[in-house]
Image (cartoon, rainbow, N blue to C red; front, side, top):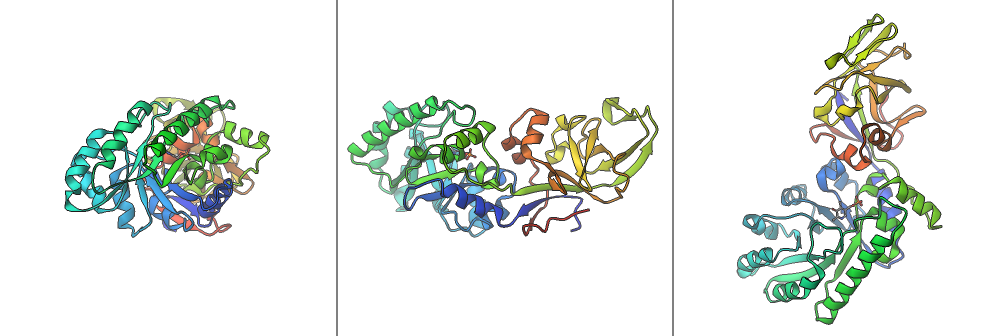
Length: 385
Ligand SMILES: *Cc1c(COP(=O)(O)O)cnc(C)c1O
């Protein structure tokens, strides 16, 4: 392969996961919007979008991410979830990117741009309790009147986002948000505006709340084969609904660049935070926190070498990490070390790593450096040693 460190993407897994998630919905003709923001949750936007033939739409956060997808030749609809600077709105219009809008200033600036007979499809975002982007329900009617009065603007979508599905087994807050959203939708429709696409469902809502599906799912983490949380998984199991079978998409690998023996009592790494208690065979790996390997993995994580666990010794450096190979005597120079993924009967999941460093699986994968090469592999043909 020729790489010191790389990400392997299982080619059939993203679309498999998409179809599993889509089958959570009984709504006929439901659209699937694949959320591929933040470099497809660290998996690689180019690779992942090319492996999702069943995605009807894509969603990203920023204008630049949307332009990048167009640059790859993607012609399917692309929704921008985040803010676009007023001075760059015309770029979004020219690239036919759908805008999520919630500021009146965005409409005013679009009005100026659209005098040149272009059209812009907008998705109006409703604040229902997440306390971030969105228009407060009482301001929606005036906002829509303003939007509807601008030639060239098409109010294509209405959306909201849930605050508290993943983190709890109690879904009262989400139900309340859904109630507010439905009321807004009702007012919007009676005022004569009928957005074609209504979307609210992230992965957890897709799996747990059919009522949130409307006519498009807007789903991220599940596409990558990861569950939004343990609570989501437990809720799905106890709800008596079919539990989607999600297949993790990504493995993260590197190669051993030095092996050497230290006597008992030797210090390893910056700050001398680890001292060997026995004769120790040390392996040096060329990956560090600059690559997205969390510094909190120091003295707490392990990697897999030849199907066995090798604990991380000492602190994680910017570009290096040291591991204990004493119990894996057959380990050799330039052997593969698995940071995330399977090796033989062992596995390191994003959830395990999240627990080691005190975060969530979303952050573990999203922070993997975009500079890491992404290699697409067939199922069952992952590289070894
Ligand atoms: C990230 C995001 C999603 C996807 O959420 P998942 O939990 O990854 O499925 C959906 N909608 C919005 C607005 C988001 O920001």
